[in-house]
Image 1 (cartoon, one colour):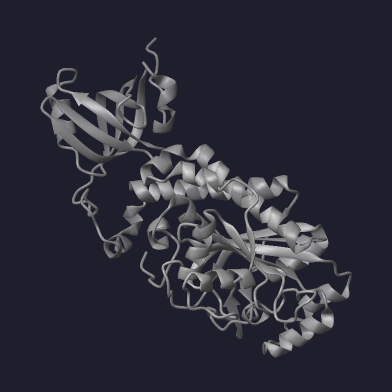
Image 2 (cartoon, rainbow, N blue to C red; image 1 turned 90 degrees about the vertical axis):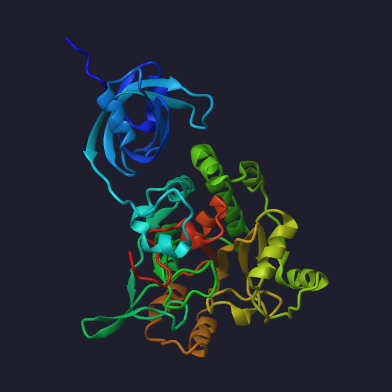
Length: 435
């Protein structure tokens, strides 16, 4: 009886050295060298090289290999060998090729292409090295997020995507008609998470959020995914400890699982590894302003930081840094007042080094019913729409804290990408709605 040839994925070839296998793949690129044809293959799990030697195959098969077009899908059969010259470490000596689907005039050629061109072809750009590596790392971050919060005793909740009001008082919302009533795509799940924390103690939401504003910087999107934990019986310093453990855990997981992807992106893994060392520095907003002023920045107390200020502060400490206790006037209405000052709230932003800016924003939440009622009115929000939120302060309120991390911002930081649109080519949107 003839032994059947196993069909495997590229990522598993290390387990089949010296054996003949079959792989379904697409042709990424090819090159020739006289009597050899080198096929660069991908199958969604990894990239590697298959070599067709003229002396080992029929003339028809060799001509077929030489004539293959970029992105043709095929089955390749051959023996797996170790290849110390490649970063992947293995290659295939091809004995057979079966074309599945032909490809002609593929638009993304091996030459350099600009961002605008790739934007218009991003349904195809997903197939290429940088998006492959980036989205594989993104997938690890998602899996690690669930692992971390499950391990820490959190319950996952899903907040609504359609809301009747702006949770943070902004007008930058996507409005839609909800059976004759206005409704908005949600910009945060936080307020709902606070309700969940009063029921389950520790919860997190993880879902899409929206901002109906034109992107002003390379770090802003109109659609992105947000992780928002909320924790009952927890003050701010305890929350900061959860936050830094979470970031360290995420970075450790991608370093453990995405070595190939970091090599593709040429990311400095030792630098990333240094960001897992805890604790992260805590610097008050007051001290941050003074540090900026002492280093030539024209900033006054009371303003929010822009990209240059955030970059300087994080790079000054050479690791993620918490800026704590921001001015009350530039933060959301629900943040807890400082016990000894009326002009600041108990809040924190975690700034990432290398110019990636804020990756986490959080605070302790105020629990005073009358104060929050006054703040809601001062923000011009509807008391009727926020009655349910005030109820959380009427019926057994406890100290509680929470934070939000934007997944796409975290992906951009971890991958070392310069532009979030390049890091997440699809399906996240900026201001352009083409696919």
